[in-house]
Amino acid sequence: MSSTLDITILHDRNLPDEAKCLIQLGYDEATRLINIISAWQEGTELFLVNQQAGLRPVKVGDELFYLVKRSLKLSLLTGGLFDVTFASIDKIWYFDRPLIEKPSDEKIKASIKNINYEFIELDEQAKTIFIRNKDTKIELGAIGKGFIANKIKAKLISLGIESGLVNAGGDLVSWGKSIHPDGIWKVGIADPNKTTDYIGWLPIRNEAIATSGNYERFAMIDGKQYSHIINPKTGYPVKGIKSVTVLSPDPELCDVLATSIFLMGRKKGLDFANNFNDIRCFIVDDNGEYYYSDNLEKRYYQK
Image (cartoon, rainbow, N blue to C red; front, side, top):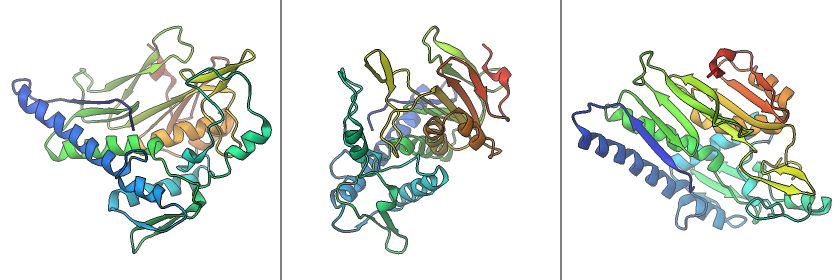
């Protein structure tokens, strides 16, 4: 979990040292959680769960158990488009260096053989996690950033901070009032076409927001662009959408659904979002057209 982390709080400006200490406590909370849920940091609970895949169940603490349990519920909700075992994919698509030719259909099909959230077994009484398939790994980045942002928020509220904003690698959660006269936090929505810095500013209050986009990481093969967002069921990059922004009261949910709706496609994604009163969604397609869920006011995106 190498994402950036920014913490903003509203505090008495005459006590800057105290404010710095409070913010540091937020960073300390993030470090504590990363030392539990990181898949790549040796010695964490999740590292051990992955290490023992196919061998034995591993007893874990309440926080990791909760996060994996919720991940499995969200996998069911999204029909498996969100899957924390996606880290098990064979790396045949490369987005950090030139990819000269498209992988064969056979390689693509084989690359996803170890991705399946149903390989994960939870024992509620024993508080254990067991991955039945030895080549399957769990990675919680897609939900973990929102989880950490939420825990930092709870920590700071417990310390008396009534207003703040946490940005964990692009997963933002706000609470209380900002310094703006209307008390709203205004979050810039990046322009996926990169013709300007932002499409506009989105006002949020006591709400979370996350964006999933294909405009920063992609491969160019024979003049065609292939997104880094890959469907875990097919192994193929997704087409048709440039970015999806999701708003809800829950930062864990925002990041999960931003990517899941991206994978669903514009029509199915909007239909999915419209099933929930507290989920709002904004989509930019490959043609640069904007689409909104029914409960998102279009005026929000005006500059």
